[in-house]
Image (cartoon, rainbow, N blue to C red; front, side, top):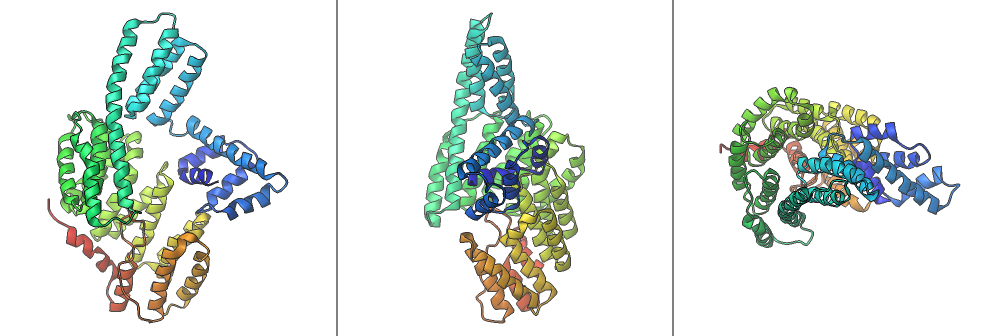
Length: 481
């Protein structure tokens, strides 16, 4: 069941802890453990789980158990997880208000509806806020002392929210279109991409929004970031963003503090993309001093992305100890989603490779596999393991054995072709056969590209330092804005 597998894999460390505290006991936990340890969903995974723990029951009953597990996880998330997150708080309050409304308990439904509306405003969710307003309108009619004046106020608020919701839909539609265009499974060329991106962004350019409508402004910036990246004008976006940050990241701007720090993270990421090293140097120096004194709610939202971006900047600026220290802090954070945990982990391995620390790299891989056994099935780990062994033993004896073992594993996967090509390229180098050096994308396209097999092989062939070759692109884009 792919949907259940994706849900289990999406759980953060804190959510897994909460699930262990509040889970429903029974055989369904065997499914949870099996899905948690696997790196991808396959029919074989389901078959093995069924044979080991459910062979005495029908397949239909096994399917019911998977649905029961999914409901159990969702219940725990709704009731116990992210208690301070406005979106989760809204869902709980709105659900309770609906129950009260169905029981025709008007006053109580209005009360919960008001609280739900506050949470929707805190989450900048206009569509959700409209739902809370409409629920209050229905509940008000059922209350003992209905007020026409209050009903008219709610109607006016509903109209204002409808306008804001429509703008949010325009932004969401634009962001979705640009994201799909960036993935580009249709194979458009650069000219076609630029033409489509310009058409997609036009409704955002045409849309008026007030300066104090911060959630809309943040959505607009997200669209502009993708657009400028697609048309090759990242510097233009960075200048626009820098001007917005200068105006709104101040004590007197009116922008809530949490959103200011979210905006700072966006600015740091943009600065890294275009090489704004002066801004990054000053901001990271200041933020390192501020981080420990921030309220916990801001730390939880701000630190994961901040530590990741600052680690990459330290790496590019020849400060590997600080880069590793920032990533270590990010790994210790609670509540970080699974995808980011994985990315931070592989950034750390890539930095150890660039720093020519193969012994430490292999030790950390081994320790990581003891903590997270499911990573033993990760193809990126295969590549890094081979490279670390080649750094330790340039003759390639152990690396060749690893390549053959991993090749046999990857051949069984539909998604293993790219990794097989990478291992084949490394094998050609080890066996001193001719190979054509070309840029090889190892990390996913939305990660920072700090693992380059072609540059690593070039460094080995020339007797140069891989780290220097890797950071040359950073020095080429490093500039003063």
